[in-house]
Length: 170
Image (tube, rainbow, N blue to C red):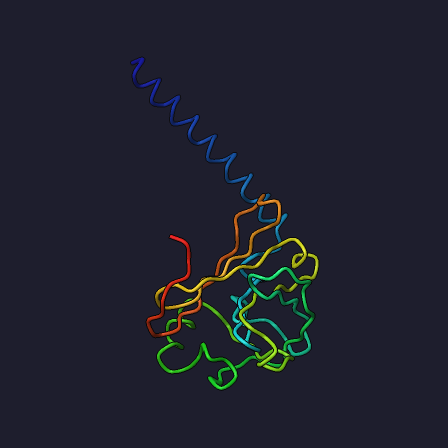
């Protein structure tokens, strides 16, 4: 009988712990700003983001990865399915990149002016994060971490469709 009570007690403690964790996590998500829908990666003047609701002229704040520069203000031109605008949609890449849930948008910049970057839908958020990228064996790994490291970092992945030498730390 006492073993049964211990098991029931441990189960109740676990359930209470889960409820507290769920509430804490939900509160964290409210304090962030919908990270997956509001941060995306860029290759040249193409934004890949897990948000299909961006509209032309919507402002995004672009940070070049691995640089300590202020965010640059850009605008969404249009959603794009054109591999000439978004290299991530090229044959051999499109299936994997679209399969990851990204929507693709042309941005209001000369493609030659932009390198890999991370774009934010809120200016305030761009000031709170540092943007990094590194090359994996088949793509580019992106990460945005808050300066104070208080939240889980955002991450994204761009599949290139060919083998490259990795620059990511092990």
